[in-house]
Image 1 (spheres, rainbow, N blue to C red):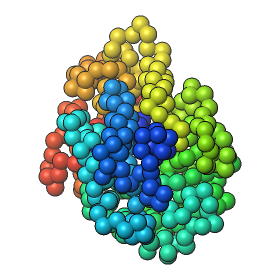
Image 2 (cartoon, rainbow, N blue to C red; image 1 turned 135 degrees about the horizontal axis):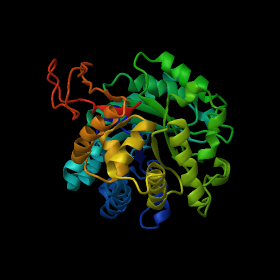
Image 3 (spheres, rainbow, N blue to C red; image 1 turned 135 degrees about the vertical axis):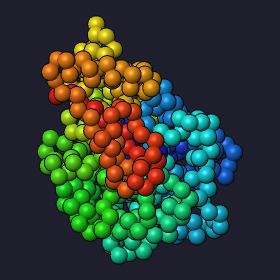
Image 4 (tube, rainbow, N blue to C red; image 1 turned 180 degrees about the vertical axis):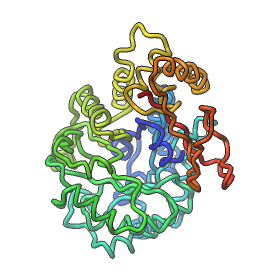
Length: 405
């Protein structure tokens, strides 16, 4: 899945919930003291545990026809740790192959799964003082970033970053690839990066330091309320594309190494996440420590219920009109919201266009665009997405978006 295009076309994208923490608490396998769950792809029981987790999260997306992002189990698979452990296998490439095998049984639907090549900071994710300088980070992380990029991931993701300097160095290394990349910070209850920097300062520094800026920024390993979104400037909200939240609102110092699992009410968690999507436009939502498929199911149920709110008693086309009066949506968004096939959406849209025109409203079509060369299909009359760009012949095209004014 092309994550850049999906972000343009969809208002909501699901992300996986806990992986490494869920594996650690499963009791079925042991994680490596330095590499965490990275080596489980070589163990039959480990592969089974990982596959069950990924498949469980994908099943939530599949059942609701929602795109999803999943990340390679390579958070700690950097060159230094692999070398210390005496591992000669290409763990990063093998992890990508493992996730491709997870996707394979889904056939054509697998196109809606975006695989992120995941890296972490060098040292403790909750100790910003241990973070690398910008130059050291660029050098240290380049090895793993290059291997994940060469293995064919859809995008690169650096997650649970407590230090702005190290994050900036990672961004400099990631921009050298041709892939879109995302920087994800861990924050405190005041909505600041753990090293004390504000998100506004962090985003601005990285954006200005890179010739090819990140696709966007995310937050992970923090309860939704930690963001304090009402206090964040638009400069932050406009660049924040995702949030993978802990199940607990406890501080990191209380959670790190805790023997028992802490979790807040799942309904509250989902409501807080829904608010991030509805009020602040955060599109990629998923879970981190303590979360499970149940959290994702609750979130998706609330998303679907919110979209369908006020639709009782209306025909399908009336519901479609009501949705398009409030927001810009693509056929895939409408398909998910109304539980109809995407092909049927286009048929109904043709009737909707005639209806609103008769009522002297405007049916606005934001045309498809070629991702490769930027060509816009401004003169196209059909509502469906074209198959190929007439200028560069690429098939990487965004879908048209619709709106009623």
